[in-house]
Image (tube, rainbow, N blue to C red; front, side, top):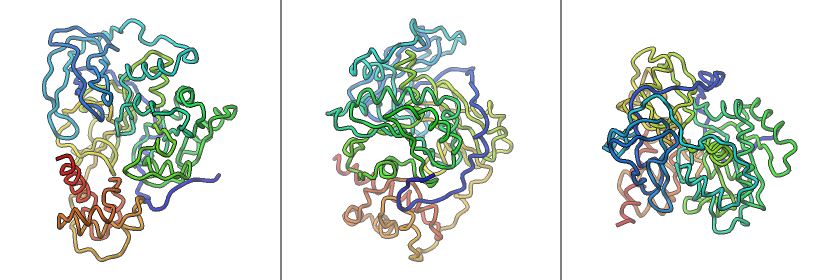
Length: 439
């Protein structure tokens, strides 16, 4: 079996064996539900409800405010307690709609009804996806209807399903490949109906041979779809590197996939497209991996958006021991948390709890010029030089030496024997440069 890949990258401990073989479990929330109005790239949604309003499951409670924005859908029925600031994964307080779940799950009329998407126009399909509040569920949270609306449909050559799931510990995409492969194929076919010249590619890392075999069997009669095995390597699922591995085409930080004739969506997004278009079901849930050596029963959960993170931990049996670090997302690109009183949002992919915070124990020393960071960097830049410039706040040379091409994967930091905070320094430098450009 041939595998496709890119230059650079690393092989961290995978940790996927903790949860990969356990079927997805549905979690029924108990307490109040919290829906931040900013769960996507672009402008926050505008609230459509007020304190005291009764809402239904599947009802739109926040409306997209502009082209690059996304609707917010209630995942339960209940009464609006208010609209107020609540803590989010980023550590900031953000405006959110609070709903007291009545546990009746009274549904909006028509929710879940089957629909023949072959009879829908392109415009109707895109409108349904927009109304459903779909965003990129791989982490970027870019509104899906925008991504699926290029200037010219005929210039899209590839529609790629990102099934690499290269982040250590995460197994939610794998479980969906095993448990819901038909929905994935139908979701991809819906996407392909928008782009007449496109070929569909389902790109899966080769550490998932059973998923590869299952998908190959499902699409063997589909002339426009192929399964492409990828070499298991982080960050194989990064958009730029995935496109190169799957098609041989290259883009940089100033370009979008559509500039290479590609549309890329992850597994959960494509399945959510199917649910919205073919099953009249908007985005109300996430499949979330709860794992780590501090978790008693690591597994994946089908959890309603708005559910408190604490309920996820409890559903996984709680902590074996008090964790020193809890991360929302994967260990390479996730966000460390200081509180679990945070709601599941569209961007929630995993909750990872470590018994020991090994990163906090690391002591930095001087760079020894070994070059490991440059060898690991998938963006083909020189982290050692960029670190020097970031420490001196030398934005001119940081830009000159392609610092803005950093993809924040953290591979350089992972391999650095001096334990330098390379990736964090680059993030701060890039943020400073982008801020000054806006001014």
